Length: 74
Image (cartoon, rainbow, N blue to C red; front, top):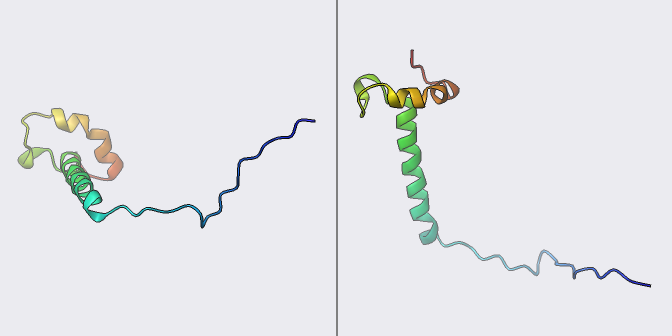
């Protein structure tokens, strides 16, 4: 008769957890935070007197996102 071979059980205490050093995470956190601030600017404030680009192109691209996030635009 054929018997099923089960993989060895791994206990929670046998797996070593390697912490990620702050020096490895910090540049990515700064990058993602800056990217989020730029995105928030374009969705929330890129129109009218504060616009960086002329015309309504950026406004039309982020129009639905503005309403989804609760920013008034018209």
